[in-house]
Length: 474
Image (tube, rainbow, N blue to C red; front, side):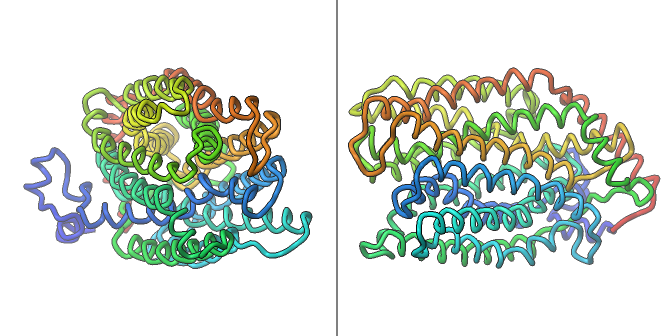
C-alpha cells in the first residue's frame, strides 16, 4: 500500500495522522468504522432473537417442553463450537483478492438469513418431529452464523495494527450492535404481533423475514466499505498443528477464553430469563420490551467511554472494574418487589452502564493476544484466535441457555399458567444473583491477564519493525 492509498483509505494525511501520534495507514475513517459496525447490527438481528426470544418461542409458541428446549440449545451450541475452529483455520489460510475474512461476509449473508427464518418457522409435526426440526434448524443457523460472524470478528484485528484504533472500531461495532439489540429487544414482539394478526407463529416468521433481509443489506455494506491491512509475512505462516499448539501456550488468550465462557453463561442465562421475569413475576409481559430498550440505551450511552478509560487505566483494569461494579448492580436486582418498577429500571440502567465499557475491550484484547503470539513465537493465526475465543464464548452461551431451561424445570415452571413461589424465585435468581456473581468472578480471572499498556506498545513497536524488514504483502 503506497502513501496515496493510505491517505485515501483512512481519510487522514500524514500530517493529520501525526497529530494523533499514529501513521495515516493505521487510522480508520468514519466510513470504514461505521461500515464495519453495521455488520454487527446484522449479526444482532439474529443473535438477539435467539438470545432473548428463542427459548420462550420454543416453550410458549412452538409448544416444546422447557427441558427439551434447553437441551436443544445446548446441543446446537456445542455443534457450533466444533465448527468455529474449523472456520478459523480455513479463513486463516484463505487467499483471495478480497482478503482472508471479507469473502465469508459476502457469500455467507444469504444462507445466514434463510436459516434464521427457518429457525423461527413452526411446521406442524408431532412432538418428536418438532424437537428434531428445532434442533436441526438451530444447529444449521449457528453454523451459518459462525461462518459469517467469526471472519467478521477477525476482520477488526487486520484492519489496523494499533490497539487503540481497535478499541475505536470496536466501539463503533458495539454501538451498531446495540442498535440492532435495541430493535430486536424493543420492537420484535410488537412487529411480530403486527405481522401475525393474532397468529404468533406467523408473526415471528415474518419478523425474521424482515430482519433477514436487513442483515443481508448490512453485511454487503460491511464488505464494500472495509479493507484488510495487517498481513502475516509469508515466511511466518505456520502449520495447523503449530498454530493450535501456540494457542494453548498463550496465557492471555487462555484467560480471555475462561472469561468468555463465564461471561456468556451469565448473558445467556439472564437474556433467556428476562421474558419470563416480566411475564410471570412482574405480571406485565409487554413491559419487557421497554425494559430492554432502556437497558440498551444505557449501554449505547456508556459505550463511548471505553476508549478514553482504556487509554487512562488500561484495558485490563477497566474490564476488571466494569465486571465488579456491574455484577453488584445485577445481584441487587433480586431485592425489589414486583411493584418496584422504578427501582428495577434504575438498577438495570446502572448495571448496563457499568458493564458497557468492557464490551469492546474483550474483542480488542483477543486481537492483542494474536499480536502476543506473533511477538513471542513469530506465528500469527488471527482467525484461529478469534474462532477459539468464540468457541469458548459459545460454550458459555449454550451452557447458560441450557441451565436456564433446566432450572425452569427444577423450579416447577409451567408454561402459560400461574407460577408457584418456587418458580418465581428461580426466575428471579436467573436474572439477578446467579449472573451477577458470575460476572464479578470475571474480574478474578482477569487479574492473571498479563498484557498491559506497556506490553501492547512494545509489541506494536517490535512487530512493526519486523514487518518493515519483511516482504510487503498487500
